[in-house]
Amino acid sequence: MSLTSSMRNIDSPHFYNELGELISSTGHGVFAAKMLHLVDKLVAVHQVELGEWTLDERQASLLEVNPLGSAGLHEEPPPTPAQYQDDHPLLEKVIAMDDALLIQMNAQATGTHPHHLSHQCNLVSRKSNRRCVITFHRPHTQRPFSLAELSFLKSLSHTLLPLVERHAQINRQRGRRTLGRAPDSPLAQVEQSPLQREFNQRLSQGDISLSAREKEVCLGLLTGGTVPELAERLSVKNSSVETYLKRAAAKLGVSGRHGLAKWMVGA
Image 1 (cartoon, rainbow, N blue to C red):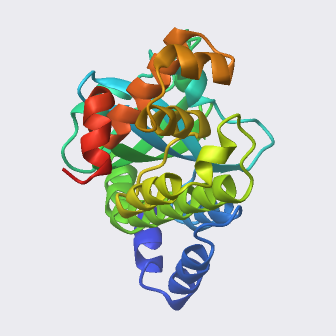
Image 2: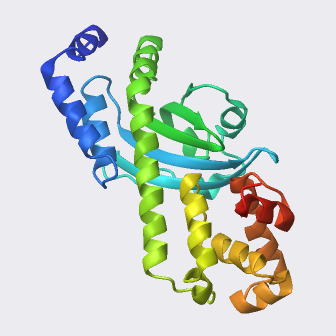
Image 3: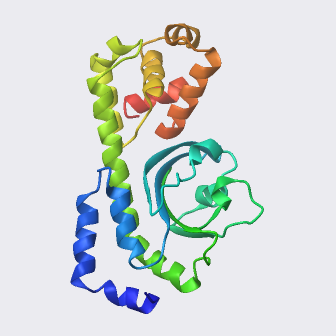
C-alpha cells in the first residue's frame, strides 16, 4: 500500500474503528498487538516494542526500563533494553529531550548491539523524569524507513504516545495495588502502618512508582532505621541499601534521608 493511500485511510471509518479498539485495550496485555495491527496497515513494520524509562536527570543516567509490551509478525523476541542500559544508543538524546522526539536508527551490518540489528523508528514522549518509548522495527533485509514514512509516523505519534502514557500509568497503578495486597518482604509489618498508607498516598498523588525494595528502604529510613540495620533486615549489603535509596530519591526528586523526610511531609 502506498503512503498516500495510508494517509487517506486515516480518514476512513475503518481506521477509527481500529483506533477505538486500541484505546479500549489500554492497560491490557493485547495493547501492543493492537497497536501493531493498526500501524502495520499504514506503514510496513515488523515489530513494535513499548517501554517506559525512568531517568535520574541529575546524574544523566537511566534508572530502569519498564517493558510495556511487544508484538511482532514473527516469533523473534525483541531486544531487551534493560540488559543494555548503560550504552543504549537512544540514551543521550532521550535524556536531553524537551519535546516529543522521533529518532531513526538504521540497521548496521557489522553491529553486535541488539538495537543495531533492525531498522527502527523510535517515538519518545517526556513527562517529568519518565520517557515513554514506542519502537517500530523493520528487518535489516528490507529498506529503511523513508522520510515520508517517518513524517507520517511522527504525525501519528500525537495519537499513539498519549495512549502509551496512559497504558504505563495503568500498569504502575496495578503494580502498586499488587504490592499493597501481597506484601512478602521482611518489612511487611511496616506496610500495614499509618505511615505506609500515607507514603502510598503521596506516591499515588505524584504518580510515582517505586520498586518493593525501594519502598522498604524509604519506609525503614522514615521510621528511624539506619543503613546497616536495613541491610541486615533485608539480607543485602550496605551499598545495596544506599543504591535503593539513591534510585528512590531520584524518582521522588529529592536528595538523601533529609530530602525524603521533607517530601513525606509535603515541604
